[in-house]
Image (cartoon, rainbow, N blue to C red; front, side, top):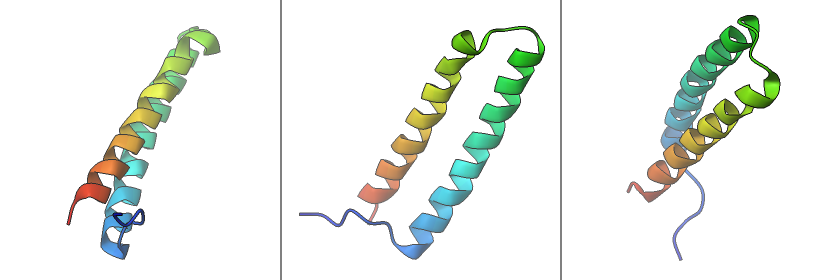
Length: 64
């Protein structure tokens, strides 16, 4: 069975990517809310950022 934990270097890289994903997501979300989009319509952005973070985590997990 493979290791399900990231090394320290991988964790740092993933944390940086998570911060980058989250910053862009929050900027887009607040921009939409400022333009009058309802929160229910803006929620798919949350799913996109969650998908991107999980995809990056699994990508780093598969790296050797």
